[in-house]
Length: 152
Image 1 (cartoon, helix red, strand yellow):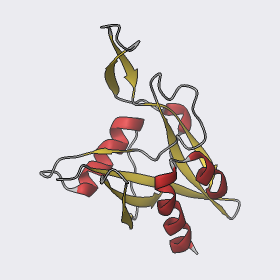
Image 2: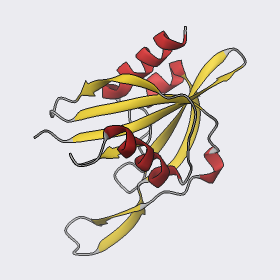
Image 3: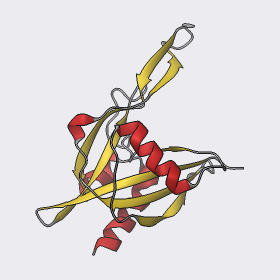
Image 4: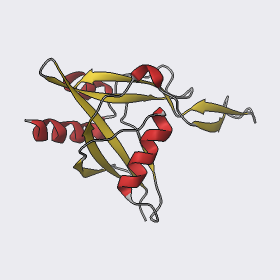
């Protein structure tokens, strides 16, 4: 079975333009990466969890915040690896200054035998759709295109 992940793409309207909330992955691998590295809060789930429930759970785990409103289901995207990404969009305001992410553990530095913990998300930020297309992981751009199409 292919891996699967689910997430929530939060948007808001500001000065007649749409903005989306993206998060930057934490940890040493992404420390100096910017363009093409950002994502919306999402994460993997198992078959016994519904994708929408996983999306809400992942958002809370990665941001420390809850979102509510009228959710728009977006078409799933399949990565080259075969992983399937499910997403929902919702108009909501998220405080980028109050990100509280869960932690993950990896061996760092590599081959050191030392395990270190890092936040899964190190920061969040609002971007215009045009700027978000530059910042987001390229495989996730179709979600931005569909959201823009649905908001027009």
